[in-house]
Image (cartoon, rainbow, N blue to C red; front, side):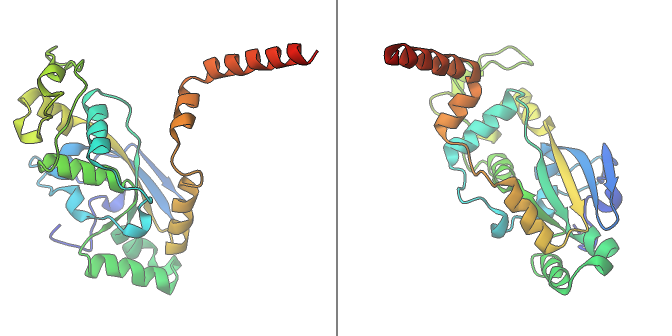
Length: 244
């Protein structure tokens, strides 16, 4: 952005005017935006906007212990291409916080947010979404390949691109136009918060990740809840009969 005192989400509206909800509280506000991946990595020439990713500071203090490897990033791209539901990202609008809520902030928060603006030259702080933003940028910049399942079929043209790309993978630049459009047009919900102190931001991040990442057994259990419950009940019946 040319003016680092204004964020892409200034006044609760994205540069293209899109906003689906605004919640105003006594000392803070939250706006919810549908944002295309194109707006994140490329910007929008129709609205003369630069890539939102260029305005986002991916602070290490809000990074979960595990960074995604290329296989995890490829799996996320696969979710995008298959039109799977995508989790929202959480952002702190630093510029708006300083412009509109600074009187409610402690000195440490003001100092921290000014550092994001003046030193890092960003207006947005990523609260929950670092891995996803890194994945968007790296795939768009051809830094890793997407390896779809061999059964992947494009919903738009019905072609079996999975058979073409499952072994070697494919960079973004080598995708057919239809798949490039699929990637760039997918919308990611952004919850953008203004007015939170640094302490509240840290507390929010901690609360988001109290339970940590799900383990493989937990994922299987959540997917097959009814089956697991049936097996546990059957096992209990057998043990009770043996004990009788």
